[in-house]
Length: 267
Ligand SMILES: NC(=O)c1ccc[n+]([C@@H]2O[C@H](COP(=O)([O-])OP(=O)(O)OC[C@H]3O[C@@H](n4cnc5c(N)ncnc54)[C@H](O)[C@@H]3O)[C@@H](O)[C@H]2O)c1
Image 1 (tube, rainbow, N blue to C red):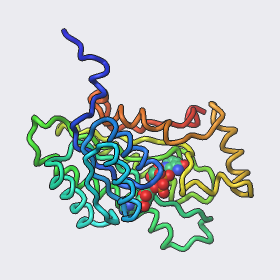
Image 2 (tube, rainbow, N blue to C red):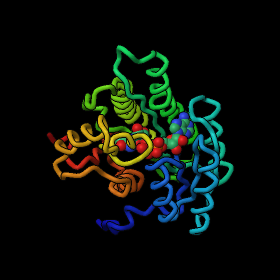
Image 3 (cartoon, rainbow, N blue to C red):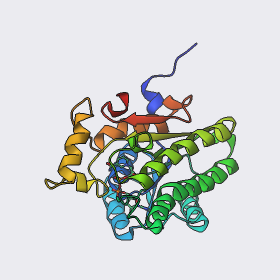
């Protein structure tokens, strides 16, 4: 038996890749990495100004980039994003969803609407994106190869700290469940779905934890004590796992949450 070259197993060049939440910290790092790997890109986000700026940057490096400015929380918006991919690049090969919202607060004080907003962003939006992508994959010819989906969960899907994270923790645990369920639904259809579960990396969502004031400072220090490698992460730590999960190297991996967390979940 001839083994494929190990490097070719990570080759995603020429693939049509969609990044939703593309102007965020993880999303923009992913878009840049996929552009450098030779993908045809579609970048979607609700922040149209940042999308334009990102597209200019990526096109400057030679990438083919389509923009779709949408709040990805409805069936119509999810469909518009997929339509944008297909109109620009003819098909969808891989989707990476990196949207997210947190609203920190103790349950006794938190208005129900804030819980709902977190659920809408972190669960409904992901489910809708997967529904629209699944419908598109089903229309594509089998010789297009396997469809790949990667979503962003969190170590918070498994752990209850820091306090004040009821909505966020529940939404990420729900997302892990959705990934496992979709892996079962999609396994026979040639579609893989996996999650990446980071611990803290610096972004607008986590900025409060990088403060020198409390509660940010105390939370960060307590968190660091629980990370065996002794530091919080940055988006560079996440890209290798993302490329693995989007590439043929992971064809036999589905329904998995890959923790890229410096060992946080090992404890
Ligand atoms: N930052 C961390 O420490 C951390 C840790 C673990 C997991 N995560 C997860 O990583 C993912 C990315 O987070 P980040 O830190 O890069 O956040 P970020 O705030 O930098 O990026 C989120 C992006 O998603 C966009 N967005 C949000 N809701 C949207 C919607 N409904 N439709 C379209 N665009 C939308 C925002 O405009 C933003 O560009 C999130 O799912 C987050 O929960 C983050």
